[in-house]
Amino acid sequence: MKCSDLRLAQKECPELKLLDVRDVSEFMANPWKETINISLGRLSYVWDQELKTDDSVVIVTPKRSAGFLAARKLKKAGFTSIFYLQEDCTACNSLQRASMN
Image 1 (cartoon, one colour):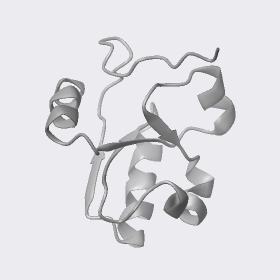
Image 2 (cartoon, helix red, strand yellow):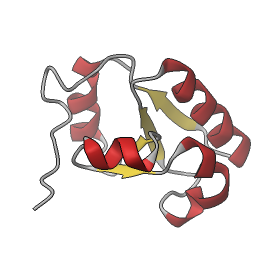
Image 3 (cartoon, helix red, strand yellow):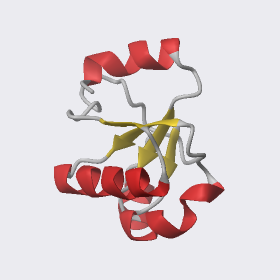
């Protein structure tokens, strides 16, 4: 999925889940609004606390390899609607910074 498609997809599917698989320390230093943070190492163990297998999930991470690993883990868990965000959306404001206040 390209950055330009993200907002359109969110309008068409409001229950679309954005999954940030960065490490917690990276996430807290630079959080994004509307994302669920589950670090890649914990994903196999705690995904069911935030996600259901019938959810449509967009994986958000600056590391392409981490995105593919996360997709593989989710597919193994039974997810069928998985997307990977190919671009860094921070430049176009598709992903907004979360306020830590």
